Image (tube, rainbow, N blue to C red):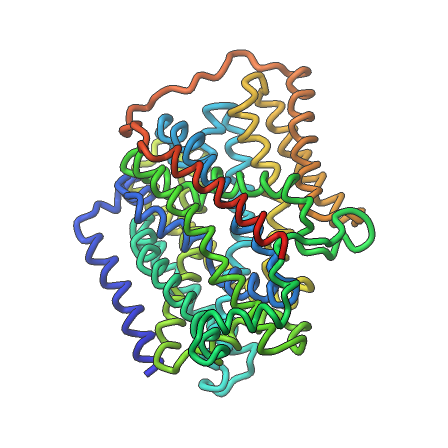
Length: 532
């Protein structure tokens, strides 16, 4: 029955997406890489949610919540603030310029070398950090629920290898043959499936704990460990213990918001959905709907971890990433586990094939067309994009099994590695918008300084300071370095943002009221849960 429901839902998603694409032209540049610039708000929101939420969240964040409490919720809740900034400031400017990739903006604002450097960094960050961790956590979850190794009579590590290979191959096929629109449609169905299935886990667990009464079950979980519900961490951010701290409260005001702004307003795999919007109104709707979902998502990726502590106590402290799969097996009826694993695989595939599609877009348009074949046709660029996706998928599948045994959990590992790439790129893009005098030489100096600074400070000198604080310090220093380099090599002509005339730029009339609601809701959430 579990296998039947798994195949039924997976087959439906594949059939629906293929049917929706039956008349689409996937051999043109905009058709393949941007979904023909036809994405609506609901599709953008569903795709953004599932591109972001994957098994590294379900497994990693619930594992962290089990061991460290609800402090990890800051990664999700503060996303709403960044999505407000994306909707009101960045989306109108990106769509006005008619961009296909973020590096394309850097060429318009600075020069081609800056664009190429960032394009290469993006591709390396996808292959070295995001893709392998997504594949490994997905395989870990599927192995734990379906016990692939027992079914195939192999060791657990071999079962995880096999699952990585199968899931990686399926994800690559989606990305290679369907382009962004295939990814977006499958994301939308899987995204709402993930919300339903993800909410079922804590709901069924709480009903079981409370003998059929949801609120009584919640009360029992709370009374078991009230301190774990507090979202304000008392961990040290500087000094002894700072390096191993999960998320001290102070970092929310330094590097965390820089990271959130980068991820939700500049990260290619996220912003590519916005660039594929049919108009500015739908882009803003998609971003702000996602902000609302991100505030609700902790019920799926934090609450189960707290429930896991009620069930398992401290018995799994040495292996927190096993908490969520064990909880799913404990509370879901057998016939629902197939549907759950199908949605889980959809979440893995979404993040995986979104990153592949984005990397292919960046390479084809930013490197191949610029340096290898300047007169390449749209068909040629699409073909190169497909080959790029295939090669990157092979690399990611090969690296994935080696990310096991992260000391602070897989989600924490992902964030630590992201700092190498995210903050230097963010500082250059923000400087491009906010500081018109910063030159191309300044941008390159800031980019290179940022890369070296984080690696030396965190991995070289191993300072007793939380890595998110290092992000904040790095961001400020990057901006200073860019201005100093600009004084030595000044910019010749000011940058003018021109309207490419590609889309209707009339904003959504409810964008500002909706944004205000998200900001107020986020503040209230912290005031309430910070006093638990």
